[in-house]
View 1: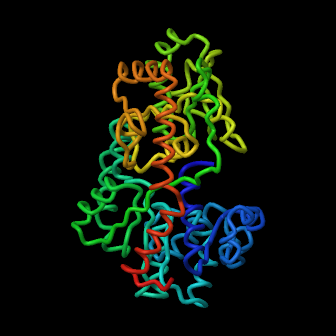
View 2: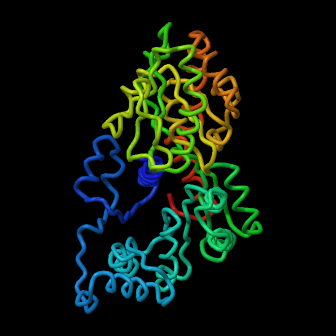
View 3: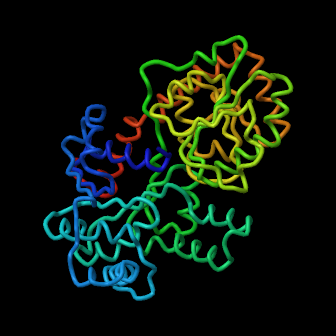
Length: 395
């Protein structure tokens, strides 16, 4: 449904191929296990769902808000901590497993799950804990501070927190070399950091009907619309770039595919015949198959954009800003087209729309890059090697 969920899921699937995996999830277990036909390695994983747990104790007698606040603080043994609803749900499963099982490594997803570290250490002070960092949250906080969405004190909080991760966890997985460098510098090189890039499942066939058309009919933007970097980038594209592209290709249509709705300040001026908000879809492949180009006009963000790797794997050429393409080992003009200014984005998009042969060449090169470096099976083998060599996990 979004890039973060896809990253989490695919890392879990690759771990299940190489190790004995236990996973705690919030999704309904039966619904989750529908995936095993496509991802058979997860059949042997031990999956625990928070939906299967009902906690009955003295806290249940309190009003719900007070119950959650007190329960969260009790679990974390810190009175000044804000309530963590996610931790409240998984705490009973986590503590029971820590008492019953012996784990070599625990991997925590997203910054909020770091609240579990002290709980884990109560049961096992020696266990290796890895934080899977989807982003450098300090960078996202800096962008939010510029937009005046957070205070300087809140920004400093992110910087202090991520700058002291070496005191909290044993290692970090990052999405890119840039993120690795930032985390290493912030933590004074006292922390193991391994790049586990975002990847893509390479389809057996390419989805290039739109790419091979002499007269293109569709562009595509794919991404979660509630994401501020996505909303901001799409707003910039629609206001500054799209009208000029339409001057040259008046019958062209922009397909916007993704979950959620745009924040209000980014939502004006999109209700036009040339822009179709498709929303959530069961399968993105047919939509990519219509498109001559995938646009990624991001102005802020961190990590690696799965939407680019997804398009590359399907054979759809990408026009992106440098920020949008961060973390991908590309050659500009070979596997992707980079455009950082309004005029560059307009001119390079129009040039590509006018040049079928170039679109087809980009399609082939992008597909080759995705298959050789960003196939999840390739990434999974490298991740397993790191765990075996650096953290001494038995394969």
